Image (tube, rainbow, N blue to C red; front, side, top):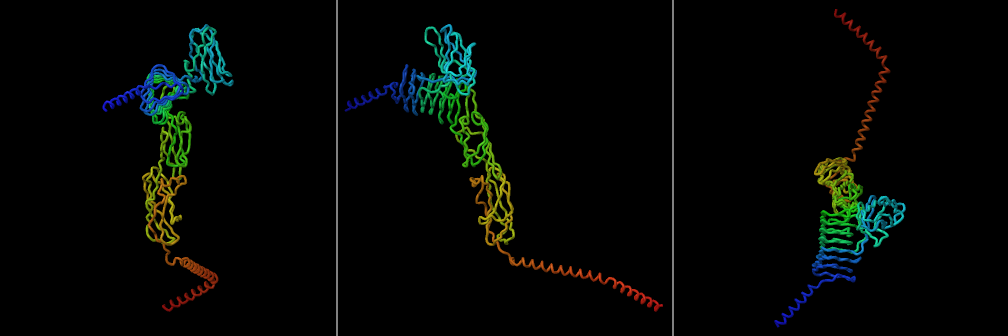
Length: 567
């Protein structure tokens, strides 16, 4: 029994050892090969198919692998690809984008005493374009053709081609051939092989796809013609990437590029860092020309605010530093990343100089209470929250001076109001009884943040019965959607006041009218009496004077008689 178990165990170990030693073959017939255990590939190999490195496995490529067009390599999460050799696409579509003053520096060796250079372009150049090429004393106009010929010496001398162009769209040189009448094949330089200044090497399409969801490590390696996506971790040290840009680095991942060369991009950047992905970029050579070393591109630039219809003044936004004005929508949302240029917030330019967006946003909410505003640096994130400081006006209490009051007579009250928000506001306060606007003195006040005021008010009522005074801030239309964020919408209430009708209140007008009538009658009588006295005085003025004279003479005679008697 023990011997049987020992033999069974030995067979299992032998089988596992055999499996562990099995190495996957490089796919050559268009099939898919899965790497499920650690492997190392050496030597020179040709690949035609797809390759998957599973989680837990590491594929190390120390030799050169040439991949057919359309092949793919996928490194799954948890898997790793270590490259110290080369991955080479077998068909590359590259071109050298020509700018005004671009120069080509060429030497084909000693082929013949004389010959011609044929320069091929990626399209027929319109006749309306200015597109001149000068080598030595000869100038050729390329307008209207997709190639030019120029006579040159091919005796080993250096050749310099100068381009003088004026055309709005991109023209690419795809190859340069040295033609001669001697023996041997014509020498040809592809766009990627040209020594040039002032141009920009562009790969129009990739040869194969390299999708890194796990780990990619390049050390002294060559990557040629790859469409590279890093959604895991990518590290490149002292390596050369030709026609393998742009490298897309997904949000939440990282890339390290150190002492490496990235030449030939299909876009205007060698590396595109998406959203909040991390990048370390040190001592590298980029494509140059109009191609940046790397950019940080946000997928969106949405900002959530605390109110609708906020004016947003934007300056210095994105790669071009644009300026514009916009409004938040009814939900307080605004997107400041309307174009790709406005979503580029960091970049290293073609000369290796680092830049960062220097942008400012001014948020202003204009209301009947005043203008509420804040100024901030533009967030360099896909989403952000920015609140405009707002007031919060609260009716704290209403204290009436009495619990009873007479109809049609005023009663005083004291309203306590305070601002617990973050902005100064000038508000109107309206008062109601049973949701009906009631008659009070007008109330307008300005409150700074943290300020509390007591406002006196007079209250009239034209009906009797118990009533409660309710006072609230008048809310501008633009703030009604966020009314609860700026005031206690229910306002404040006074204690109940009993309004009553005073005694004989209804007879008072008749008494007043009676008094007025009596006063008029008395005044009329006095006026008539004085008028009569004046008339009598005028009619009897002369007779009275004669009588007074006779009385005076009689009195004189009596006085004289009395004097004689005394004597």
